[in-house]
Length: 459
Ligand SMILES: *Cc1c(COP(=O)(O)O)cnc(C)c1O
Image (spheres, protein in one colour):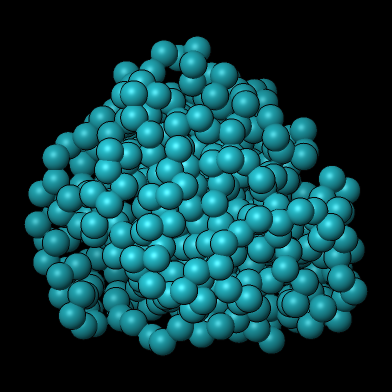
C-alpha cells in the first residue's frame, strides 16, 4: 500500500517509511492512497477467526511489500499474546441493545496497548532491516507513555525516553512506567508541567540531528500504524454482534480522533458500520469540529485525563476525505487554523453529520453514569468509558450500540471514588505494582539537559 499526506506536498511513501516517519514533511498526516474493498462474503468467512488471525487478515494489505507474510504473522501473534483475556477484545452486554467492547486487557490496562504492542515490534523490525537504531521520545501525562514503554521494552534496536511531569502523574500511572527496568527504557521526571514536557519533545523533533546517527521516532497517534491496528477491533466486535445483518453504531471516547478514525477506516474498507458517536469530556474540540467550528479553547483538567486536549490531531485525516482528498485545500484550511478559528463549508459539515454525532460530557455526568451503570448492571466502568456511555443519548435510535471501554477502572481511581465506590483492585498480576523497584531520572526543565541525557543513554 502507498500512503499520501493530507496536505498533498510530501513524498508518497510505502508502509515501512510511514511507520518510521510519523508526521509528513509538509506538516500533514499520512493516509492510505487507496484502501482495498473487502466483500461481504469475505467478512462472513472471517467471522470464525480468533482476534490475532483476524488482525493479520485486516492489516496485511497495509503491510504487504514491506516484510514477508510469515514474519508479520508471528509479530501479530506475539503482540496480542501478552493480553490478559483470551478473547483479546471481548464484548459484554450492558442492556438489551448495548454492549461494551473491553479494550483494557492489555499490559497497561488501556486501549493504547492494541496499537503500541504492535508498533514497538514493527519499528524494531524495520530498524533491524536497515541496520539502524532508533530513539523513541515522547511526553505523557498518562496512558501513552506506559503503553509505549511496554511495547518497546523487548526491542533490540530501540531506546525509549519518556518524559512525565515530576510529581504530577498518579502513582499507578508513574509506576506503570518506572518499574519497567529494561536497559532500553529511560524515564525522565521533568521539573515542570505536562506542557513543558511536550515543548521539549517538540523542540527535539525540530532538531533531530542531536541523536545522530540514531533516528528519532514518534509513537503518538499521528503514526498511521496505530490507526491501522485500531481498525481490527471494530471488525472483530462487529462480526460477533451481527453487523452484517443489522445496523450497528459505535460510541467512542475521543480526544485526538485516533481511535474513532480506526473505525472509520474499517468502514472505508467495506465493513458495514452505520454510525459513529464521538464522546468527549469538557475539552470538546471534536464536538465543535464536527459542527464545522475549528477553534481552540483553554485546556480543562477533568476526571478523564487521557481525553484532555486542545487540538485533535487526527481530525485532519477525516477532513481530508470530507474535502474530496484535496491536499492543497487542506493545507489552506490548516494554515488558517494555525492563526485563528476556521468555519468549515456546509457541504463538509453535512457529510460529517451523515456518519457522526458528537456529545460533550462533564465530570458530574461522568460520575453519575459510572453510578448508574453499576446499579443497572453491576459493571464498574472507568471515566473515559462513561463519557461514551452517556453520549449514547445522541446515537440514532434502533441501532445495536457498542461503547468502546478504553481503560480499566483501577487506572482512574479518583473518578471512581468520586462516583462513590471504593478503590478498584488492580488485576492479580499487578497487585505488587506499588512495591516494585522504580527507576527514573529527575531533570530540570531545560532542553539541553534533556538532550544530553538522551545522548547519554542511547545504546
Ligand atoms: C487516549 C485515550 C482516549 C482517546 O483516544 P483518541 O485516539 O486520542 O481519540 C480515550 N480513552 C483513554 C483511556 C485513552 O487512553
